[in-house]
Image (cartoon, rainbow, N blue to C red; front, side, top):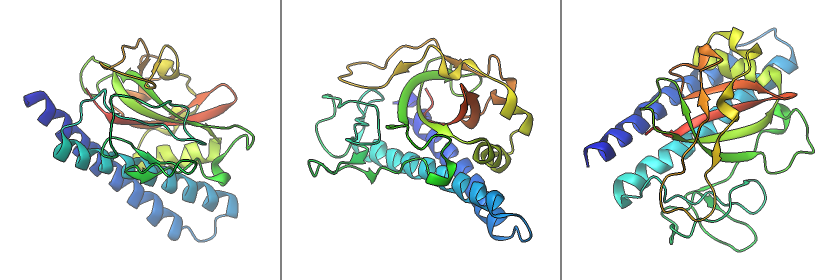
Length: 228
């Protein structure tokens, strides 16, 4: 029970921090007169991604508090945009994150993809993934539940870092946060183990539950949904 309360408090603090970053991104975009349309598009895309993260976390906080869902009990399946398959441990809509279009399955929220203006490659499908991985000084040494949005362009990543108050130098430092992870997908009866550790190479990510880092030819936006 103590650990459950600690996790919920951690989620609340994450949501508050994300809301502050989202507010900064929106205000910055609306007051950025004189900048070109590319800058404004990147700011708006960054604000939208931060809003998506806030919405997911807020929905999970409410459902965990009311329904006591275990950390391995979430279902992130979506028929077109998520790479996760269904989790049989989740048997109702209280632990299903996304509403699905092909079978009218209900969920906590409607999935939202990487905004078009933020995409590096517009041909990539199912860019939204869910991982078991850790970030240095986020929660404990146990792996966390992390949402990953692939295929983000550099300009949007820069604006995300700015909104979060992370040193912009992080944009050019690769990290193991995307290496060695375990997918949070399929039927789970315990939380997946993982060897991925964010912040061990890109030290700008230490203690950062949300961020944006280079990966292959583009960038990934990540946000910790459950810090364990």
